[in-house]
Image (cartoon, rainbow, N blue to C red; front, side):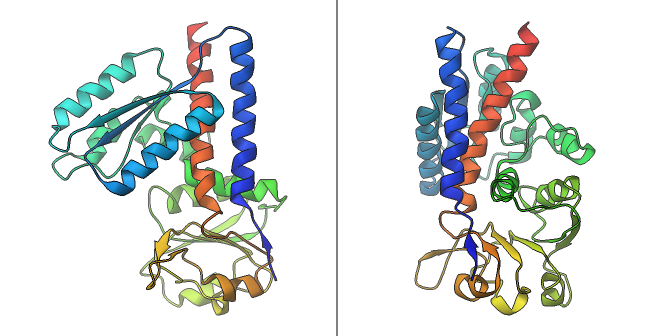
Length: 286
């Protein structure tokens, strides 16, 4: 049976570390880090995510600026707001919550955010630095995966690492980060043939495919480390991951639960990225 990788506990540790740094800034009378979050429209799930990010900012002591715009906001109006925040020296991180309404080009919006304020790390410059191995900040979800592995002293170097999913948000950056830690990385996707044969070769399996209970116990080898990034609803409407937890739990050496695994880490790493962005801006001002 597996050891549970407690993302909730690790996330609390990350946020406590950030809080300690903010308290030190306050004690020295210095400027406090600020995160600006933009929400366009009234998507219920997005509204929940934005509220949670505000709570995280309060927990670590950041200044939180929220911008809730009506669904009919034009692309030019949204970009104008981003330009204002880019030019505002008191704002360290800018996050535009996705999805945006269909009449807005999300790629154009994300590319408008200044790379040094791109705390989600979606900008092409951020992606390029990750590929080159010189990132200032790391995409929040895959960074959370790596931090969990580090926290439990799970060595990546030399391990066979299989990533299921090739999204720009999780799959591709997770593969690059595992490769940067000297893992031997295979990326699987919807066109992969004999998927189970590939996943059973994994010492470390990261699933980010977005399909409920897609990975079953017979698809992993004994002793594998299983990191489930999925956030899905099963037929009963219950929150679950990509992995069939009960069957994978019996075979894995370590496994993340859903909820309580990677999810809390994504939010915690956003706080860490905002702190990093603050450091970049403070150094530029000196």
